[in-house]
Amino acid sequence: MFSPQTKLKLDKWIAHFLVVLMALMVLNVTWQVVSRYIFQNPSSFTDELSRYMLIWVGMLGAAYVAGKNEHLAIDILLTKLDEKAQDKLMILINACVFIFALVVMVIGGSNLVYLTFILEQKSAVLQIPLAYIYGIIPFSGLLVIYYQVVAIKFLATLKSAV
Image 1 (cartoon, rainbow, N blue to C red):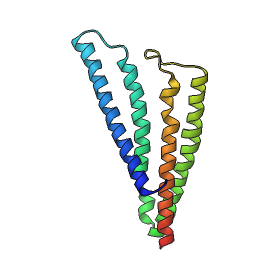
Image 2: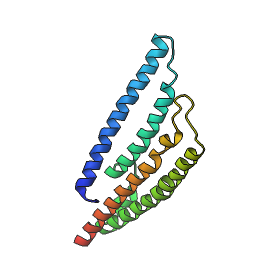
Image 3: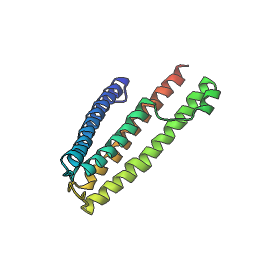
C-alpha cells in the first residue's frame, strides 16, 4: 500500500485528473468571456463553477506537489546540516506536515463537510450541495497524509540502511 509503485500510480492518476480539471476550467472561463463579450448575454453559472473548480485544483494540486516534495520550502538550515541530520530534520518536517494535514485538513475539513451537509447548504446558482465542493479538503488531507507516510517510511529505510 505504501510502496513506490502505488505512489507513482496515485501521482499519475492525480496528475491526469488535474489536467482534465484545468482543461474544463479553461473551457468554462472561455465560455464565460465569449458569452459576456460576444453574445452580450453572460452565462450565470460559469463564475460559480470556475470558483469551485479552482478550489478543487488548488487543494488537489497542493496534495500532489506535497507528494512530489516540490512545494515551496526555505532550505537554508537543511543545506547547512550533514546528511544524517538532514534525514532527521526531513522526518520531523514530514511529521509536522502529517499532523497539520490530519488536524486541519482531515478533521477540520470533515467537520466543515458535515456541517454544510447537515445544514443542507447549496451553492447559489448551481444548487450543488456545498458539502460536495468542500469534500475535497479532507480528501486532499488524506492524500497529504499518505504522501507523508511514504516519505517518512522512505527516509527511515535510508536511515536504517546506513
